[in-house]
Length: 200
Image (tube, rainbow, N blue to C red; front, top):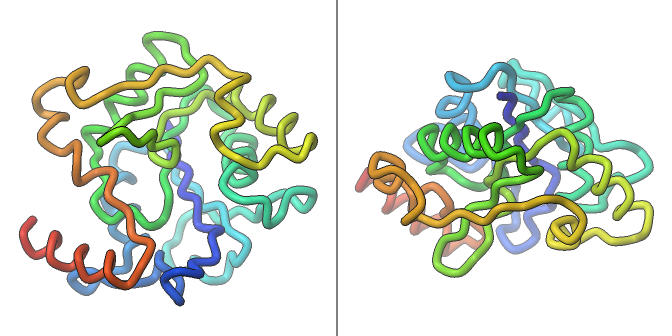
């Protein structure tokens, strides 16, 4: 399994780069790398500002020029093309409480059931930015971007997707389910993240 971290967003609502904000003295993106690198064959960061993440010591990739600035679907395409593997975990850079147990389970299902993507659902929301993707999904991603379709959900009309829920998961995965998908968009979210970090 390779892990693709999408760090190309502009963080407009936060007012600063969410990936570099700190919890307990560590940048959010450092927490993600620390949690997921032990289970990853390789970690890749997809971004439009590669110099920002050189200090992490992992591979940093620019979005393809043709699709630069086209959002997470473009980042997904870039990451899958660079990973050159059939199983990838994709994670957004603003999810401080990601879980290696949840990640492993999603990728296991991807391999076992031969889907193009395994997407978790929590509280009615599909979390396509913490999902397992096959390298095959890049074909449909490229076709959609070339057709002007930038939404991640538009990809799911063209690939074989399975949605999974907390109740589907083993007990040890369920224990880390809710926190895993929590992400930060606003300053209020960041303050809440600091409270959660203290509790954890």
